[in-house]
Image (cartoon, rainbow, N blue to C red; front, side, top):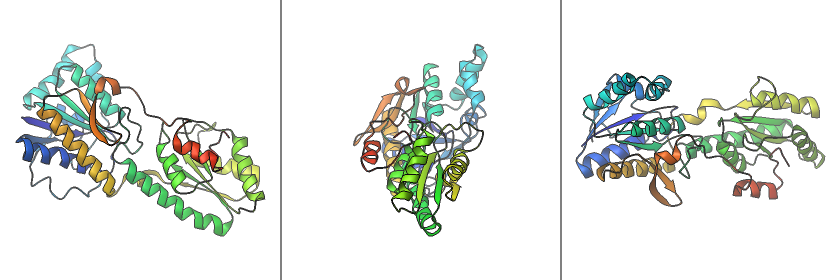
Length: 338
């Protein structure tokens, strides 16, 4: 069998470990031929490929980024849904001209939706979930998340010393457009006093009251962790908005930190390397068994697969009954609504 692999969307630590997991399993265990499709779905259209061998897949396990390059290809998705049959035929022709028996698509929510669309066109496709945001529906965890949480937690740890030394409020903004998984896990692990998530919203009075209460108790500083997707009434970044409002309403010196793309870069954690390896290996197994139209997933302790039709267009979000949220509440951590 001839299998193509592409990566799409934002980069995440563990992509290369996953490519390696797919490729080495497919080559060594199933005797397949593997080609890498460069620069996302556009590489499929332009047949921008490179052959992947056991040798070329060596030495990439600990590398950040993706050896295949990535892109957010909205034009490609429009072609799939286009009413013009010629657009869809162009995609099919590119797939067939490359002689593919299956296409493995590594990416987040948008990528999994596109992979499902390809499957609906009659192409053999398998998805592998990838995002530091951990918001892909149908899997308990995505590779890249653990590394991002480690980096974010380390940043919060470092802010504690500055905040305590200067008796300041420190606001740190972490990644997560729609889902607050990084902020929740890093906030709890890093000992944040206030954790603000897109899913839960916030009441500014609750935030201010919590900070004042801590100061009245003799706690000289506070750490506020906020997800980038938290909506604020201005066009500012959430960290900027909350830092200004907190200082204005409490009189306490407040500083902001936006961690940004540091959370997505660098070498993946051991957990993410192993998760990518397992997900990639299971993708190769699905291809060998002719089970297409699926996304590999980790559910509980099991590496399994779910239909792409169940995943497409859905998000996995933090809910108020999440165990970390409930435990945080019991410990006196504020989530902006209580």
